[in-house]
Length: 350
Image (cartoon, helix red, strand yellow):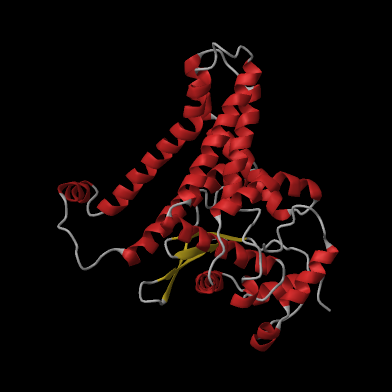
């Protein structure tokens, strides 16, 4: 007899790339890309992480910092891979002097060096926009607002508003909207599995595009936790104030990761309340995918994750192709809705 179909933790995660999906299971990851000719290309590889084999990588509140860095590194790598399918091969321009110089300096690794430079510049830009700009704007009000506690709150509100404006602005871009659709396909696949449903296009499409372990929720946790920390940690020296806002970024990231990790593994009422703002924001950073996008996401999952074995181990039943096609997911969803009518539930698609 099958176990109760409550949400189970699968351990897989991923991200959207250009016209595709990256899915990661432990150290193994796969990138599935829909090529211009319509075919799905899948690359499978290992990424062990910068703390592989070191105990520090498992320490609470520390592991989150390294996990975040690993996500950025792997994300950049897989994004470059997906973009390689859409480079214009017909009209290649001659190599520029800058490219030639980079190749010479890096001994033939000019493209990698350029990607690293772009990554560093983007990171510096993000710190400036989301951490230092709110502090600067709040500092302009210090002659009008004398209360330090109120200033700390205003700084936090400005930081969150800048973040929301940024997310909203890029969501209006056509290319970003397609990436957000693939982001939705990624979440639907994971939700489908963690609710104990067969991984087919039909059943994946019926799931929610929102997920508690999303990077969008992580970034929002970063914003909220920064408000709390800067409210209690204060110094008078202006230079120290700026330094603190940079130095505490790893601390904020570590705390945010633990909150996100807890949200992904728990399903009580308090966790749903904490997760609600991030889930709401995901309505901007995810869009409903098309079936062909879901096919790409499924290809990425199947390359690194034995979902049939997972359903057998976690939910107590075996899946064959015929049963999967005849599976009445709408009936199961109705049963689940009746069993758990709790505000903020993310298990049913809109």
